Structure formats: structure tokens, C-alpha cells
Image (cartoon, rainbow over all chains, first blue to last red; front, side, top):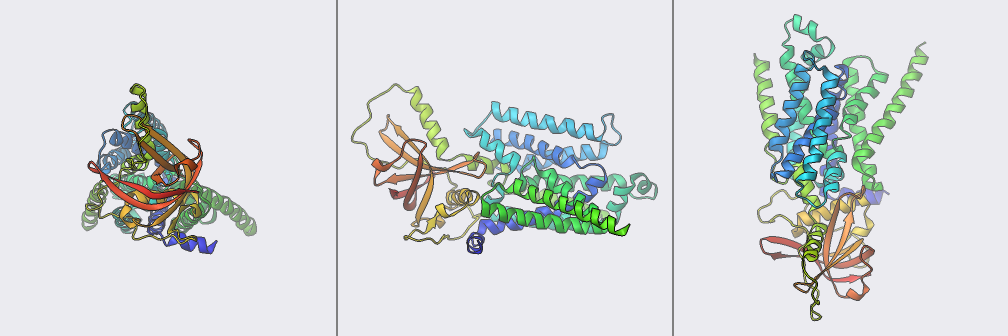
Length: 281
Length: 200
């Protein structure tokens, strides 16, 4: 087993995948706590479906650099959902569901009607479940992911207090002079960037798991915002790393293996939380 | 004010960087690259064949190289995901794909298509689904070994030129091939093939 693992780890694309996987897990868990607390757990799913729809358009148009339209499209939808969701006539969850299914449906429709590839099922499967995208990264993509991850972490550290304030009580934050709109915009942009990056790792259908599971697992054991954030980062990185190693060794799909690891850790945290609560009483 | 400026700079940086990926960088383009393999070529060939009237194949035709998965011009590409590769195995095989898990084997073949220069001259052993196409118009024969990923939705294939074509299984059957990895140019595209391939 170890011999096999060492053999696999000698391949550059494997350690590229591990680096990017760990960084994506780190970023998604950082923003995950905020999104779960703001009752926007499903936004990851919604935005990833939007990204799928835009990606379908890019594929049909044969764009060499699909990021040129995927990223702005996803960021725009994130801003629309996170900034106007609270005050619009169609409320948050309904707006997410509406945009999510529409983008998914139109994306698949466009790919079917104007398909430029003979392997439509392969294209859809790769986008929805990630397939082996994470194991086919180039060095440029790895560097891009490293830089973006550093930026996301920097934004989170620099604006930790403001994000904390906006997350728990937006109205109070606004009343105390915090520019809630600006910080919601920052959260929206960062969320969209993470979602687009994470599509390589787990695909658009499984992204929500990366955002929700670590935060929820940490919330079973810890109560403060800081401790929940730190623990969710640790859980997320561990699950992503373990999931990728298991998937490489056992030949299972990468995305679903990572999500299965996240779900298993959530169950363990639930049991540990129950035991911890029982001991306190 | 300072924080707003920092936030602005970071946000612009994030958006600019994400839009600055290379041509092959995007997931959609990656998907297309991953799916444009031997299967595509064979499918296209079969479609053409259906359109044409049946003609007698040239009995003198010999196994000829076929367009395999399109790979980018390596002279212009600096984004190689891997360096020189040797996957150790027995029997003098440099790259033994039969030893790898299904997730790994698909990724390895993808990298072989993407950075063929790292594999040229290496003895490759692979196992997958056998595919054959005979272009009756040109008399060319096409042999390929198709490898699928763990979810069996994506496929990559490598063309091979068999020394013993009579040992080929039925279309769609399992085949194990050992051959020397090589590339060749046809038109504006570079193609990959296993030369002197032996069917085990």
C-alpha cells in the first residue's frame, strides 16, 4: 500500500492535485462558516449551477479561456443573490433555487443543442461531479489557485471582525457604522471565486458539501465563531487530503470520496458533540 | 479608508487573476480536451463511413497511423503538468498503466496526451477497451485502446500499430498492449501512437 502511494506521489499531477485540493478545502471552509450562519448554505450549490450554465455557453462558443465569462457570470449572480436577496420580492432561498435550476437546465439544454463534442455525457459528468479534473491540472492553474487562496485568506483575516459583525447581526452592524453592503459584496465575490475553483475538485453538484459539512461538523463541538472557523478549516483540509488519497489508491471518484469523508466526519462530530454534552450535564 | 483600499486591491487582484488562466486552464476547455480522444476520431470516422457507399477495401492496405487525441503544440506550451515520467514495472516496461488504479490510469493517459514529449521512446503497457475502424475510402486501419475514468463517463485512448493484428479481440473487448510511445504530425496536429505494439 505504502509502496503504491509513494509511486503515485512521485507523479507531479498527484501532488498538484493535493496542493490545490487542500487550498480549496481551506478557502471553502473559511467562507463556509459565514454562509451557514447567514442561512446561505445552499448558495454554493446555486452558484455552481450558474457556473455550469456559463461553462456550457463557453464550451459551445469554443472559448479557449472560459474563465473570462464563467467568473464574471458567477460573481454577478453571487452579488445578486447575496446583496439583493434580503430586500427583493423573491426571498433568498427561492431566488437561489430559481437561479440554480434555471442555470442547470439551460446549461444542459445548450450543450445538447449546440454540442461541439461527441462525448456529451462525459462533459456533463466532468462538470457535475468533477471526475478527474483535479488530477489534470497544469502548473499555471496550480499557481493561480495558490495566489487566489492567499488572497481569500488575507481578505478573511483582514476583515475578520467586520465579516463576524455582518454574519451575526447585519442590522446591528449597519447601525454601528459598519458598511454591511460592502462586506456582503466582498463575501459574494469571495464565495463565487471559491465556487469556480472548487468545481475542479468536486464538480458543481458536490460543492455545497465542501462549504457546509466542515462548518456544521465544527458547530457540533465548538460554540465561538473563531473556534468553529479554525476547527472547520482543520476538518476540511483533513477530509480533502484523505479523500484524495483514498480515491487515488482505491480508484474511486475524487469528488464523491471527499464528500463521503466529510459526511463521515460530520457523523463522528455529532456523536462526539452528544457525548460532550452528556458529560457536561 | 486604508482597509477599503486594501479590499479594493485584493478584489481586483482576485478577479484579474481568475480571468488570466491559460487557454487550457478552464474546466470547460479541459473537459473538451479530455473528451476529444480516439473515441471522437473513431466516431467521426464511422459517421463518415455511414455516409459513403460501400466499396471493397484495399487488400494491400497495411496498418497505418491514425489521428489520435489532439494534443497541443508542445513547443508553445509551458504549462506541462509533469516532467519526465517512469512508472517502474517488470518486463522492461517503462510506463505500466495496468498497475494503476482507474482514477490514476485515466489521469496518466491524459498527461500522456497533454505532455507527449515526456513519454516518447518509453515502453508503455496498457489495458482497456479495444476499438477498431477501417476507413474503406483510404484503406487505412485504425487500432486503439480506450481507457475510461472511475465514473466511466470520460474516456481517453491511445492508438497503436500492432505487430500481430490477428491477435486483436472483438470490437469492444478487453485488450492489453505493449508498445513504444511516439508522436507524429499530421496536418497541423500532433498525434500519439504506440509503435511496434504487441497484443498480449
